[in-house]
Length: 413
Image 1: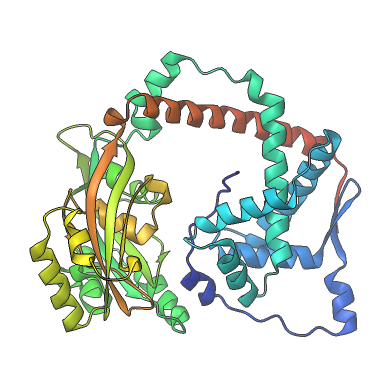
Image 2: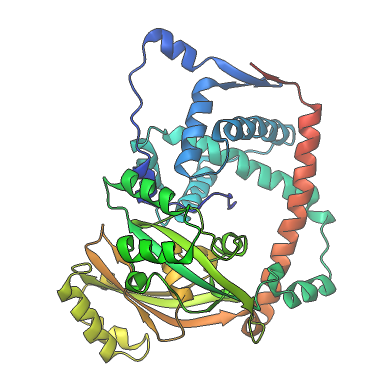
């Protein structure tokens, strides 16, 4: 189903912003459902606006979330009106599938995502109302504009030659990192520290902070990471890094159980143009004990016993299936903290920087293989074709939505 743009989030990020809605008096409740806008014959209430704004905050959406929430809700009314005109609906099963897909972007299922929203005062219905218009709009614009989209072989060839449009596959960067632990109940303190450290502008200052605060193994070395190809970075992180000047630090980036900061130390053209990574195969072996001396000793022993990912099957033999996960995913589908660690590794190299279960489980992470655009053949051409079609339809859709806005009767109270 439809993929919706939003910042990647994890359960810990939702817990960070936990707020309980107070019991409202009858007068306050009446005001809560007062209209704040009217779009043709559809009303937007104060309650809906507050709920959407709260959800956007939980998603760590940048900018003025109240303004953005109102804009989204107005656009949702326009999309629903247009869908009704063409008799397009979304069944409960379609909406549930859309909710599952959106939750997967946070590495959760829909029920876990709904529970996390509920603990922060956002109702399940608000989530449904967020998903439903997008599903109907997707069907509408594909039916209305799909036949107009014709992508030539020359356009596909050009997109592949430009490394999928990133224009950055030959670049490599030299970074330093800080991972601030954010265990449950201490997220606000971790966020405050991350906000403070993100203002650092000197290499020495960042290195001192890494040695003092970072939970990553690189902390002892001032957070310094070796040169890496930009194409190996998680897709969501690439534009953030490329938007920095040497010495500048990223905004705080939430990952599972921690908050990450990266400082750009240098950037240069690499000695060759690395092809885009289309799929990453990796394995994660889970060791009880977190970063305790016993767990780290166990990880060192495992490292000495394995040469490839296949060897981990022998290590995990006789243990519950849950202790070993292995699979292949597209870069954008991998949890961000894992993707960051994989970017540092070559095939069959290992990282033990991450934990799970609120720090109680050590992740023995091994990169098995990277599949690149040059090795993907016809499948890569199909992926590029789909991306170009979606981009073209997206431009048609935005123009159509602008037309609907101009023709609608929109009142904001």
